[in-house]
Image 1 (tube, rainbow, N blue to C red):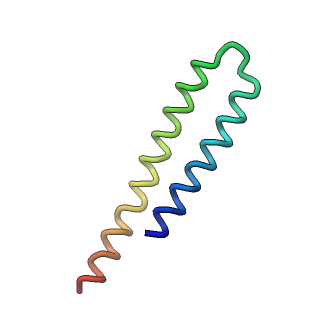
Image 2 (image 1 turned 90 degrees about the vertical axis):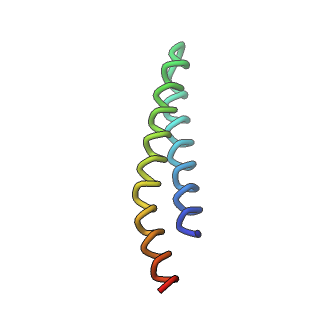
Length: 65
Protein backbone atom coordinates (compact mmCIF):
# COMPACT_ATOMS: atom_id res chain seq x y z
CA UNK A 1 0.00 0.00 0.00
CA UNK A 2 2.78 2.44 0.84
CA UNK A 3 4.46 1.70 -2.50
CA UNK A 4 1.27 2.78 -4.29
CA UNK A 5 1.12 6.00 -2.28
CA UNK A 6 4.77 6.77 -2.99
CA UNK A 7 4.33 6.07 -6.70
CA UNK A 8 1.25 8.30 -6.89
CA UNK A 9 3.11 11.08 -5.07
CA UNK A 10 5.99 10.76 -7.50
CA UNK A 11 3.55 10.95 -10.43
CA UNK A 12 2.06 14.15 -9.01
CA UNK A 13 5.51 15.71 -8.57
CA UNK A 14 6.61 14.79 -12.09
CA UNK A 15 3.37 16.07 -13.62
CA UNK A 16 3.54 19.29 -11.61
CA UNK A 17 7.13 19.92 -12.65
CA UNK A 18 6.33 19.18 -16.27
CA UNK A 19 3.32 21.51 -16.13
CA UNK A 20 5.40 24.30 -14.68
CA UNK A 21 8.12 23.82 -17.29
CA UNK A 22 5.70 23.67 -20.21
CA UNK A 23 3.39 26.49 -19.15
CA UNK A 24 6.14 28.93 -18.21
CA UNK A 25 7.14 29.45 -21.84
CA UNK A 26 3.99 28.43 -23.69
CA UNK A 27 2.70 31.86 -24.71
CA UNK A 28 -0.57 31.44 -26.60
CA UNK A 29 -0.31 27.65 -26.98
CA UNK A 30 -1.86 26.86 -23.59
CA UNK A 31 -4.52 24.43 -24.82
CA UNK A 32 -2.01 22.36 -26.79
CA UNK A 33 0.32 22.23 -23.82
CA UNK A 34 -2.52 21.11 -21.55
CA UNK A 35 -3.45 18.36 -24.02
CA UNK A 36 0.16 17.18 -24.11
CA UNK A 37 0.35 17.30 -20.32
CA UNK A 38 -2.85 15.26 -20.01
CA UNK A 39 -1.55 12.61 -22.37
CA UNK A 40 1.79 12.40 -20.56
CA UNK A 41 0.08 12.22 -17.16
CA UNK A 42 -2.23 9.42 -18.34
CA UNK A 43 0.68 7.48 -19.82
CA UNK A 44 2.77 7.91 -16.68
CA UNK A 45 -0.09 6.70 -14.49
CA UNK A 46 -0.68 3.70 -16.76
CA UNK A 47 3.03 2.84 -16.62
CA UNK A 48 3.00 3.10 -12.84
CA UNK A 49 0.01 0.77 -12.53
CA UNK A 50 1.60 -1.66 -15.00
CA UNK A 51 4.77 -1.78 -12.88
CA UNK A 52 3.07 -2.00 -9.47
CA UNK A 53 0.30 -4.49 -10.25
CA UNK A 54 2.56 -7.58 -10.56
CA UNK A 55 4.29 -6.63 -7.31
CA UNK A 56 0.95 -6.28 -5.55
CA UNK A 57 -0.25 -9.64 -6.88
CA UNK A 58 2.97 -11.35 -5.81
CA UNK A 59 2.76 -9.78 -2.37
CA UNK A 60 -0.89 -10.80 -2.07
CA UNK A 61 -0.17 -14.44 -2.90
CA UNK A 62 2.66 -14.55 -0.37
CA UNK A 63 0.32 -13.31 2.36
CA UNK A 64 -2.27 -15.98 1.52
CA UNK A 65 0.20 -18.88 1.44
